[in-house]
Length: 323
Image (cartoon, rainbow, N blue to C red; front, side, top):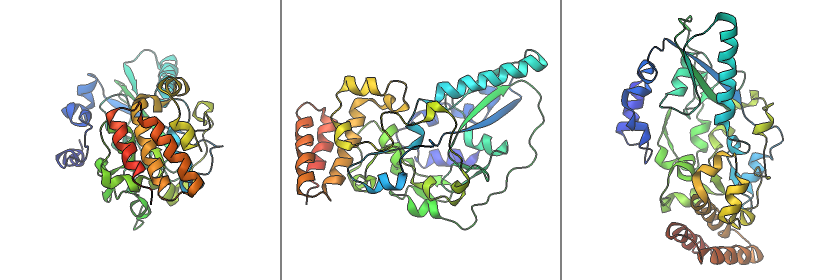
């Protein structure tokens, strides 16, 4: 049970993510989610692609789009769930049949508090789990089981100290206090979870971030200990580690769906994709040279002709960003 989660909901920091409040006590009472659960095995898997283009360089280049590193390859849900199933089957080979169910960001579970209790790391001020030897570039997964396993007795120490690097770098000041993120201001929420109009006052702060945001992890000194993933499925596809914004903006819906097959990006849909890129193009327009401006304006005007009302609103905003 985590009172911090309920306080977070009370402050409406979850924004339009209604599902965060929908499941009540299921999130913090595992035995209600899966009757018979006695223990939870929490695991992590590194995802930082080894050959992805330099993140800071991409963020500084307004012609490029920045996509959160976790989303450059194949969707992690199926891969990690498969690995969890394989682990459970290996345990069964050793001890016999037992009750279990594997999850990875796929059920109302407070994954990060569980990971902390399991000893995988401590909760950083950006609210992600940090491991002393692996930083924070990793996914989490769980196996709920009826096995009476030993309980981890010692929580990991918090090694954030007085560091506020993640809070200081956040483009939209979404980390409103240590360990508390107001999702309504978070670029990951704005580009992925928010289905409607992005607040006008936050658009200039988004820069060229078109799917997610990794700034808080980039700033964390503990990530100097992170290691590149060895999973081929997590490696960047379609040059998404440093994509050209205008090229992405030119994809029609069929191209988007085909190129994002098997990617977590596909779930936001073509409209949100165009909305996010329109904001990035507006921010690029504000600092582009004459030739670049002409290309951006042409692309925005051409797309506007067939765009939905939501995308048109963001295109109009973008066109108004030229000095």
